Image 1 (cartoon, rainbow, N blue to C red):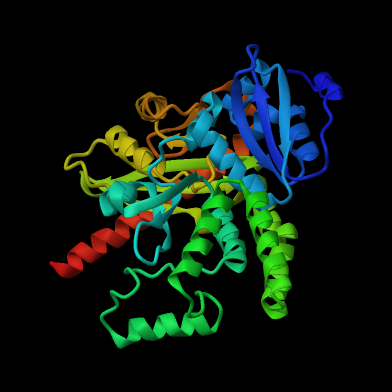
Image 2: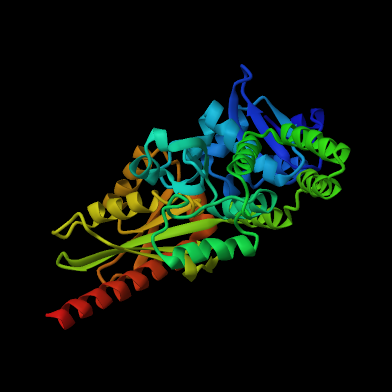
Length: 412
C-alpha cells in the first residue's frame, strides 16, 4: 500500500480501531488510535523504516487497504483493539499473542466476585478455570492498562482485595476494606444482587457493549422516576451521563507517550563482564534519539553458566530481556564483540520471531573500538549513537561486575 492510496480513504479525527487488510481482505494488523486520521497517516511517512520495525514496514507494503471502526472514547478503542486481536490473531500483531508477561483482567467466580489484574504467566499457576468467571486481555501496554482501569473504576465500583471478600483474617485487612468503601474506591454496603449487576455491567463494558448497559440503565431510570423515587433516578441519570461522556484525557496523554516511546529511535546495547567466569553479569543500556536513558538501564546476574562463555551469556541476557514486552522494543541492538556475539544475538531473536537488526562493535587488543559490523545503512547513519550505547554498556557492565566481586569478598 502506498501513500497515494490514502486519498481513497475517509479517515476521521476521532478515536477508534484500524485494520490493515491484505489482498484477500485478511486482517494483517489491528491498532488503536486517539485520532484515526493521524495514526493511519503515520504509516506512510518517508522515515517509516527508521521509526518502525522492519516487520511493520513489510506489513504496510503487503497491505492493500485500511478499514476503521470508530469508538466514542480512547478507552473503548483500547478495549476493542484487545478483543479483536484476541479473536483474529493477525499475523503482524505477533507481539500481542500468547505473551506471558502481559496483563490480563479476570473476574473471579466467587460469592462477591473480585476484579483482578493478573500477569499471563500467573494466570494458570494461581487460578483454575473454575475460579475465573470472566477473562479479558492480554493488554500489551501496562501503562495504558493502568490508566484505563482508573477510568473504569470511576464508572463501576468493584472489589480487588487480595483474598476473597469475607476471608480476611486480620482487623487491618477488614479496616482497609471499610476505608476504601468510605473514599469511594470500593462499593458501599449494598446487596449482593446489586453488586452482581455491577459485575455484569463491567463484563459488558469489556465486551464492548456499552450501549447495552446504557439501555438497561435508561429503563431503570424511567422505572424509578414513575415510582417517584427521584433521587435514585437522578443517580442513574448521572451514571448514564458518565458512560456517554467518558473522561479519558489521562488515557489520551498516556497513549501519546506510549506511541512516542515506540516510535522514537531506540538503541539497546548489551555487554557481559566477568573474571575468568566468576561473578558473570550482563547489562542492557538504552540510547533514545541520541540520548542515554539511564533510568531504563538493566542489570542481569548470569545464572545458567559457570565457565567464561560470552556468547552464551549474551543469549541468556537477551532471552530474559525479550520476556518484558512492556518495555519498548529497539530499532537496533548493539553487542560488544565480533561475529560470535552478533550471531548469538541474531539466533535468539530469530528463535523468538523478532526482526531487529544487530550490529557488533569490534575492539582491538586495548579494548578500543575499531569498527562496527552490521547493516551499512544503519552503521553510517547512527554511528555516534551506536558507539555511545556500546561505551555505556561496557562502563555499566564493568561497574556492576566490580560491585558483585566486592560483595563476594566482603562475605568471604
